[in-house]
Length: 58
Image (cartoon, rainbow, N blue to C red; front, side, top):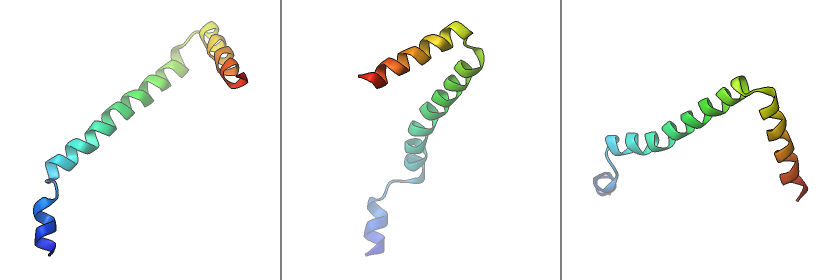
């Protein structure tokens, strides 16, 4: 029974690629967000705060 299950399960490289399809975009998103926190000018941060407030209002 366990042999049948193992025959149909994906190989290790498939699992690795599936994980990387999630991990790479997530890492890029985190780095991009951190760069915006550090490098955005003050006026840009104010605009982002205002737009967040307007989305919450309705």
